[in-house]
Length: 72
Image (tube, rainbow, N blue to C red; front, side, top):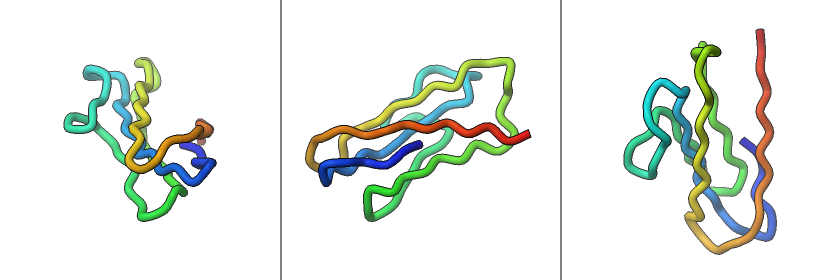
């Protein structure tokens, strides 16, 4: 899930769609790095359900990009 810009640091949270939308305390997957290069990997997601994402501003503010890549 994308790169942060403008020096901001966003934490990314995701669920594979089988539960509710992610929050900062309840999630299926989470990014965690000491810098702004965040990645969330979901192995073998349920492709019959929606992917749900949350970006939370951990430090500073700014913009970010999200890229979703699917491998078969």
